[in-house]
Structures are given as C-alpha cells and as structure tokens.
Image (cartoon, rainbow, N blue to C red; front, top):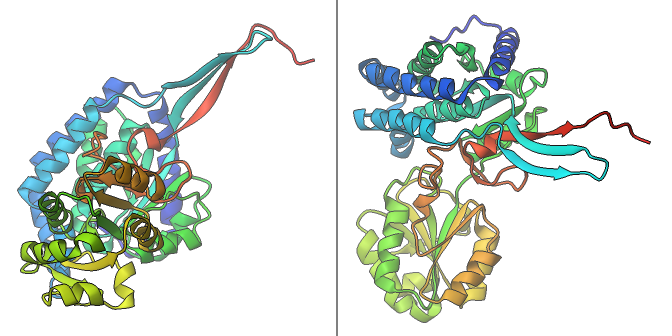
Length: 421
C-alpha cells in the first residue's frame, strides 16, 4: 500500500540503496535462475488474478467520470489481459540471455586480446502513467537483462501495481534472487518523482513512459541519464500506387484496433492522384466509428469529414479521431510526414517498390513501415517478448526497447605480462 507519511527523499534513498545491492546480486545470476524467477512470477500473477482484478477495480473506480475512456481502457485489466501479462513473462524467459554476449573480439599486435561484452546497465527507474502491464513488462525485461528496477507508476494504478510487484518478488524469492531487484515507490507524493530523477548515486537510467507532459518533465528535471519515449503522432500515407482496398483495411486497423496506444495512426495522408477514390472509402470504413477531420480538399470530396484545424496535424489523439491530409505526390507526402510526425512510427501504403524504398529511407522515424498497420510497432510483435517502451531519440536505443537495449557493454582485456612502452 502507499504510505503518505514517507519522506520522499529518504524513501527514494532507501529504495536506491536496496536496488543497488540487488543489482550486484543479479550481475552474476545464472540464466536458469533468471528464467525460473520469471516463470514463478508468471505463476504468482495467475494465482493473484482475483486480487489483481479487485485492486484494479479500485483503480478504475477512482478515475471513472474524471478521465477519458481511452485512459480508462489503458488502466483496466481483465482476465485475458492478466493472462497476457503472465504469458509475456514466460516468453521473456524463453528469449536468449543478453548478458555476457560477445559483441566484438580483436587481437592487438602486442598480443593483447580484447573482448567487448554486453553487461547490465544497473539500476533503472521506470516512471509511467496508467498502464499496469507496463510494471510487469518492465520488471521482467530488467530481470532477464540483469538490471534492478524501481517502478513509479501513476497514482491511478497504485493498487494494481502493488499486486504486480508482489508477484514479481515472489518469483525472485522462489529462484533465490534478491527480491529488491523489483521495487515500487510507495508514496504518491510527486516529490518522490523529483527525488528519483536526481538519484544519481543509485540510479543509472530513468525511462519515462506516458504522455508528452510526463516525458518533458523527466527530460527537463533529470540529472540521471534518460531514455525518452515521446508521443506517437503516427502517419499512414496512401501513395498513388496503393492497392486501395488493402490500404483502407490496414488504416482502419492502424487507427481503430486500439486507439489509446502510441502506435495508433493519428493522421492519414493521401496522394491527390487517388484522393477521389480513397477519401470516400476511408469514410465508408471508418466514419461510423471515428471522427475524421480533413483539410479543405478532403472535406470537399466527402462531407462526412469535419474541417481540420492547424492543431490537428500535430495532435496525438489517443481517441477515435483522425486527421486526413491530401498531398501532391511522394515528395510532398514525405515532407508532410517529416514536418508533423513525432518520429515514432510512420507507414506508406503502396505497391510501388521504389516509392516504398524512398519513403522508408527518407522518413526519419524510429519505425517506418510498408503496407502494414502502425500498431505492429511493438516489442512483442518484433519478437522481443515485450518492450519497456518505444524510444524516439537516436542515442543508445531507438524503437522498441527490449532485452538487448537494456544492456550496456564493457571491454575485457587479456594479456600475458604486457607493459606499455
């Protein structure tokens, strides 16, 4: 349970000390022990399903009528979603252990043998908003990659997070590993977030996952290194050489499968050469379930579209709303996406391989797709088992952040008495 009497600074210091000690214990943990912990945590999570549903019900009740449905959808757990969390833990257990991988080996003329090997980052602070499953995924990925983690979930998900962390700790204890490898901040006092962002002595990396406001707060206030996950203003561009029916099917999925995730398409860009065909078909397929806001040309083609404002072109809706923009060919389409995308995930729908290649090369986003739904931008779908987020920066990691991206490296130098002249 959360404890509002805790002093945030002292509490974070205590969590950090314990996490640092646990991280030292994980460095030498065997792959077998880590996998056992994950499988036992999955078992504990399944066993805790009634308690987790009850806790999650309290979380949902605390925000009903106060938050939009897309927020509540991200917060709500069901038996199927809990089973999905447990399966993700088991899938991560089946993945290769990233720790100790030889990334490079080379011999020097003086006889020195040098290896570059993957090692854990250390202690990771994870700050996220309403999705309880983020706590399970992040904990599992950190455990398998040998990192300790301090979770700070949104106050709205505090009851759910408590049960999830207890399940993870049961798994760690069952495998003989330090249970402090997974901890959660036990106060909703926002001063604890500020303390975590300044805890350089203990925390090696902070990863925020949530809306732009949270990410920008972390970026601006952290002295600990950060791995940023900005918003997902994702685009799907229908090129003149698209298979129109295929494109419409893909875009409906990209927008409406789940509107509240960061990989959902928010803006549909259409080539003028086929706009008369595409706009009505998009409206036929989506207007009943999604508010479409178009530029003047798109609205003139189909009056089921509402006029878009300038703000629409840069908005991550996370709701059943999409903007529709008509462009004059591939170069203008690429330029539009580059200017308005958040550089998370963008897609082109076309049967022209050269056009696809130009789009994939020119659009500078973490994930760029051809003839596929942007909702595939996901660590699980990429075969990573799960992800800790989608990194939209360019340093250290980019795109889905899985096991390999949660490792750093060090050099091992082997000699036979060499001295430097």
